[in-house]
Length: 428
Image (cartoon, rainbow, N blue to C red; front, side, top):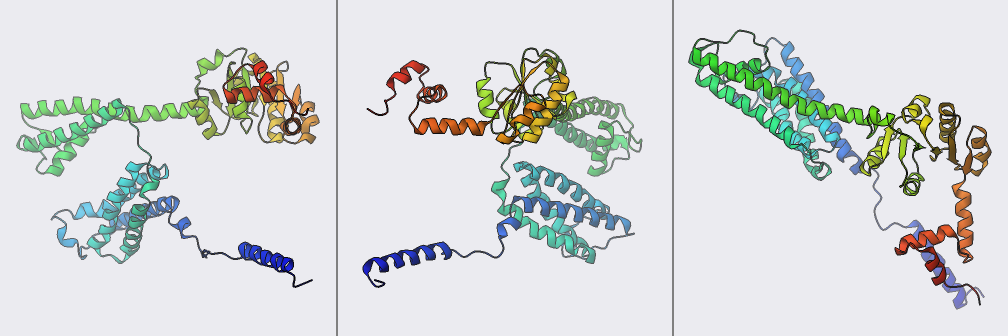
């Protein structure tokens, strides 16, 4: 009967299921504004302001003179018109570096954006040029966007104690030299203002020495000599403390955690070609062996380096890269990426580098087992087939050595016989 209680209950359940499936309690936005107001959009907006500030500065420099008709023109000190002309270029360069730092999520770069964007927005309020309106609009619009995404930029700029000391010494020398040159300005030709003093110290510390400001007394010469010696040393220390680590990072990216001399010492090791889902359990199994992983994935390489695994950041299908990993002296090679085509090329390269080495490969697709064996693999394992068989044995309650070992690891017991004795029997 169509109107019996069971039919009505069935229809009610069906209606409830349809309402749950097709009705939405929340409003679905037409545009996901978060995509246009997140960290990536913030970095892009900051970079755009940097480009506009640079173009605006070039426009001011190309003009014979820049008018100061804006509401903030009255706060510009007399004689600072030349500074305003190239301020846009300077702000553009600074914001470009800030945007690069924000792309790496540095908190220091975020603070730099919060300090520099108001300067970029204030330039059009000084000049009141029609060509500066776009810079004002973009800078004022980017500032709240940067402030809103403060939590997205939380990466600390880790400096070593030596780097901090070198940068502090460099700044201290500039302060010492500027104050001293201004105090002794009567004993110099060409130094009359604080700007002249700072200019003189910079050109002296960088050993440029244009000769437009010169000491005229013995005290001034001794002071200049002290600035020259200490300033050059501080500049060299600060420059080296920042550049050398960057070069080491590049070299680490090229050779992994191993130097060229360390690579030549490898012998009787296992070379893992590429990385994938099987990399972690494979490395756990080979924990007692010397292993070198060859991969182009920099994120995986960084993670493995943190674990103390030797990594060569290079192409695992390149014969030259495999020779760098000493495949010719290796005990075995494993090709276990998630791509059978990648495994095929890696096997060919490894066989060319060492025709006698034992090569084991993983086949993501069972149909490719014969192909991997055909290009030179000594053994090919299909994780899908093994996983399916283990699942079947497990659901039937059959014991398997691999399952016993995994249970022992999970329970913290390393005695498989004890686990086998304590395993409940199936059936009666």
